[in-house]
Length: 302
Image (cartoon, rainbow, N blue to C red; front, top):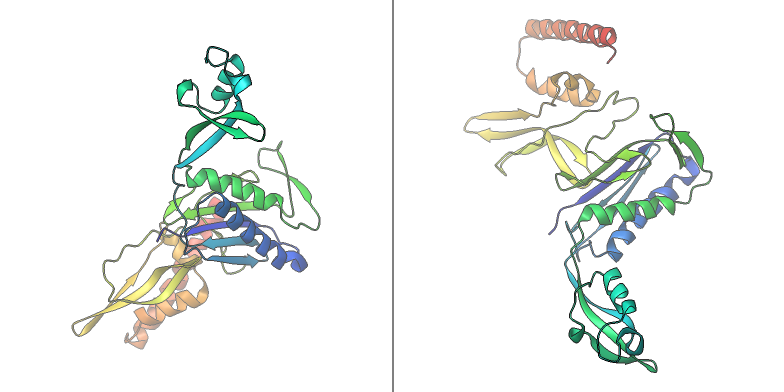
């Protein structure tokens, strides 16, 4: 099966009454746009997501490119395209050039009645289209067709470009498997960085892609990316012991930005069996480190 495609548009607070309609329209619009262009496999399943600050869709079995396709191109009546000596007329040459068939041998053109006139046809091959090109078109169509109750205009960071949308958009994610699909919309370039909850997640967190070559492990905490799960904290039993694996963000300090329940679970596992005195000392040191980190972050403005 082909990889899964995830597209997410991160915005400011969307109208509550229109949220479900916007989410369904965004997902169905992208699905329809990719399907009519031949990017979706037979096993494709679409899942729509809509929260107060994001619209997203996950599509399984998405092809990285369409397959080349043989087509027959209708040109023009024989009486217009060929001179008395059988050579192509300027009109036919212009049509062939416009159709990407410049230099084709006129003798290879097919003749067939089309209505009452004998008409010239040519065999051609439509080249493969990469997913980025197809998604760009489908994304534009989906956004244009959204049932927006009231459009608002806002300026981009350049201070000159004005964008029209339901609410200001601040982030775009487009991932096909592990790779970024280079598309853009509403002045945003697609990437792989999403945004956390506005209260729990105070900043963006970029997690490394973990490759763990075993099936004999149990995930305790999982980060979700559409239908894909990435282990943040998992364990495997070895002999009489148990090995725990914690995925550390690219920026180690981002561990403090994970949701409180996640940190509490990790702390509980790591501290299991430690003496009470050591636990008190660890709690005190953690508090001191956290306070120092907050002072550094405030001083440097990040």
